Length: 638
Image 1 (tube, rainbow, N blue to C red):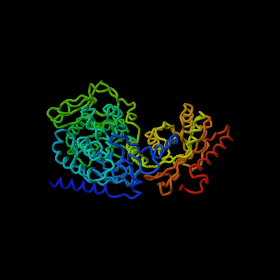
Image 2: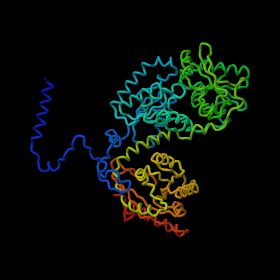
Image 3: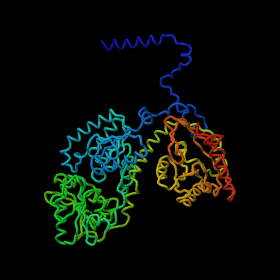
Image 4: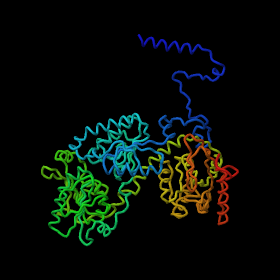
């Protein structure tokens, strides 16, 4: 009855509002609603003019259609990012990503489940990871209550806090559930260092459906996950970002070892649980080696989180394990990332691991790969001499053949470093995140295009086209012409690497080179692109200035290919953009800023040095006109 009374009261209010007389202005402004089932007109066509160029497809006023409220809020405030790492190695990798991301987004706020590395990188650690790290099936049972309590807190945080992104690093047992919780709360998820489902559970790939982007560190993983429908990108292994190890003699002096005697390195891992299980076996193997060859020096890469009882003649090096890798002639390594570190240091190794007997029995039945050593997978090892998994009595162990009969006669030294990918894995993850944030920001810009008729006239001639633009205005112009397959000349400098990856994500074909680095290669690449009929863009004052001065080499490709030169400029008001304190005063328009793109009349570069000199002067005048107006460089945009 109460519900009926409320319903009738609402109906009476609607009826009174409908009978209330409207003013003339209200009646004139009222729009007629379409009939039921009629197709509504699209708002995307508001302000669109056919043939007005790419910028005309964006609305001139108001917000860009299709931008969700969460996205509009994200671009109007500092990003808030949640980072999660459940073990020491993941803590270090996550800290590298946070450090790289802070350089690109200084105002971003980071909250984390992690340890000392994330804390040192500037993240606010909400939950500590030190007592959560665990390996094995049976061992994980003891940690389940703590993990479920943590997951409940994180799920509530995803619902109540306005996180713009969740970055999950390794640690799949917990992070697959955390990814689902973030996805349910509408938080995008970047999973860095993919779970090794290709090795033990290919059927569980469907659990990655909640992940927005998967950043993988082994080359073959990208194909595996993409074949299973997961958006994966190979970013290289983070070990490649570390400084190179010291020379062998220098490392041995630092460790207090005799440089003339052989060295055996022991690498039982960084987790206290692993060291507790592996140390007795590793110590016993070292004692057998010392009994047979007393001249050998044995040193273990120790961690402060673990204990190494009764070391005897074995030296313990605390801290960074790289000097131990550099000093060792051979190594006894636990399986996992340690084998990749040994391979990068060119250390021949035997691989061993020990689990709880029940965990070992489960693992030996679910593994789908022939090699225990992770290093054999990116190395492309075949079926010859796979690491044989064998049970060590009741204890359970996995070992690879060592120097005994049946081992490989020689250590395969070719190409191990290259298979780990290029350096800068954390940087490439950061570039991916920054590209997403930049695309979200750029989607709010309101473009207005002038001078598109000059581009149409240049295309009508059938000659190649070279667009020239000042380096400071490249960002709004890049987004304006995205997806057209244009060739873009970018410096080989490190800073050019960031711009390269961003441009490739936006559909450009990048040619690397400048007047200082790779000039001939860059010029040849531009000429070939022009000869194929592609349109080319370049910044004649990049990569390091002088700002807004055209260099002759920048127009040499246009002269050689008899191409037309079209100046392109982007204008934003002083208050409508961030002006970075850099050599060129780099321009980043603010959210919902009005951006005016202006094209100048096409120019031709004459033959010879005189023609090139005149072309440089004409291009400089045209660039100042399209960037600042007819008055040139008299004042900043307004």
